[in-house]
Amino acid sequence: MEHQRENFGGRLAVILAMAGSAIGLGNIWRFPYMVGEHGGAAFVLIYIVCTLLVSLPLFVAEVTVGRKSHSSARLALGELAPKSKFWKAFGFILVFTPLLIASYYSVIGGWSVSFFVKACALDFVKSSPDVVTGAFGSFISSPWTPLIAHFAFLAACCAIVACGVKAGIEIFSKYSIPVLFLMVLVILIYSVSLPGAGAGVKYLLKPDFSQITPSTFAYALGQSFYSLSLGMGCIITYGSYVKRDENIVASSFGTAISDLLFAIMAGFAIMPAVFSAGIEPGAGPSLIFQSVPFIFSKMGATLPVVSSICAILFFLTITVAAMTSCISLIEVGVAYLHEKTRMSRPVASAIIFVICGVVGVFCSLSFGPLSDLQIMSKGIFDLLDWFASNVLLLIAAFAVVVFVGFVLKRDEVRDEITNSGTLKGCVKLFPVLYFLIKWVAPVAVLLIFISNFIL
Ligand code: PHE
Image 1 (cartoon, rainbow, N blue to C red):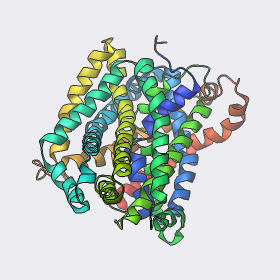
Image 2 (image 1 turned 90 degrees about the horizontal axis):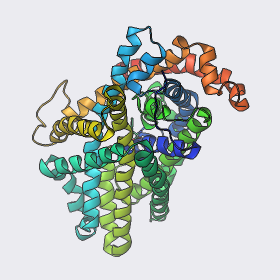
Image 3 (image 1 turned 90 degrees about the vertical axis):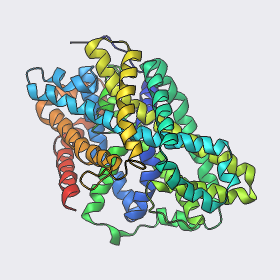
Image 4 (image 1 turned 180 degrees about the horizontal axis):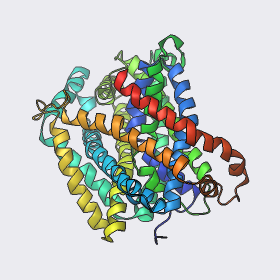
C-alpha cells in the first residue's frame, strides 16, 4: 500500500534532518566524558570502528525499512511482512520507546532552556564560581522552574512537529544544524586557548590502551547507537520521508560522519575548558550544567562581555541540539497517529504533548519532591533512562537487523539500497553492507545486551 506522504527535499535536507535527530545531548555531554572514562583516544578509535562497522549498517537498515514501507515506525514492519502478526505487534515498541525517551529527554531540554535564560540574565557572570556550581543542585530539586521549563521545551518541539515534515522539521534543521556547528566551533576555539587547556587536549588525544576492556566495546557501541538515534523508530520514520530516487547509503554515511564530527568537536570544546578550570572530567550529566557555568563565572571576572556571549551561545547550542533530537522522537508518535487515524498533525502533536508532558512531570520531580520514590533502587528518571536505552533500544535494534537480514528477501533489500541496481557504487558495496547487517550487527547487539547485564 503506498501512502500519500510528505518527502524531505533532497540529499542535504535528508542529511540535515537526520543529523538533527542524531546530534544532541548524547554528543555534547555524554561523548566527552565517556571518552575520558574509557581510555581517551583509544575509546575514540573503537567508537569510530563501531560506528562504521555496526551502527552505520544498522542505520542503513532502518532507513531501508522506512523508505521501503513508506510508513512510520509503528506500521512499517507490519506493512513489509503483512502475514506476520508478530511484526505487526512489534511495531508497538518502536512507538513506545521514543515517547518514553521524549518524556525525560524534554526534562533535560528544559534544564538547557533554564540555563539559557540564566545566561541571558548574566547570572553566571554576576555570581562567584562556587555559587554557580552549587546552584545546580537546588535548581533541579526545586519543583516549579524545571517543570515549567520542561513544558516550554516540549511545547516548542511539538509546535515544530505540528507544522509538518517540510515546513517544520526540514526548515528548522536546515538552519539550526549549520548554526550549531558554527557555535561549537566558536566555543572550541575559545576553550583550547585557555591557560592549562593543553591537558584537556592531551586527554582526548593520548590513547591509553591499558584501559581497554571488553566493556569498552559495549560502551562505545551503546554510545554510538544512542548518538545515531538507532533502535527508537526515529530513523525508520525519517527514512519514510526519503524520496525513492535518493541514495540511502550516501545519506546515511553523511549523517554518521556529521554526528561523529560533532561529537569530536564537542569533546574539544568542553574538555580543555574543564581541565583549565581544574574540574573532574568524569562528572557525567552535571558536567555541562555545573562545570560549564563555573568556567563562565571564572572567565567573567576578567572578560565579562566575552564570557556572557559564550555562555549564551553555549546554552543556546545545547537547547537547539536537544530540540532537533526531541523533535525526531515526537515525530514517531505524531506520524503514527496521523497515518493511523487520519487526525491532523496539530491534534496529534497536542496528544503527544499531553502524554510526554505528564510522564515528564514524574521524571522531573524525581530529582526533588519524588526523590525517595525508588524502583529497583533507581529514581524514576534513571529507571526510564536505563530501561529505554539499555533494554528497549537494544531489543528494537536487534529486531530491525534481523528483519532486514532474515525476513526481507536479499533481492528486495538490494533493490531498495541500490535503487533497483541504478546506483553503481551501492551495487558494489552491497555484499559487504548486507553481510554487516545480516551477521555482524545482530551479534554485536546481542553482545552489548548481554554485557549490560553481566559486566
Ligand atoms: N541521538 C540523540 C543524542 O545524541 C538522542 C536521541 C536518541 C534522539 C534517540 C532521538 C532518538 O542526543
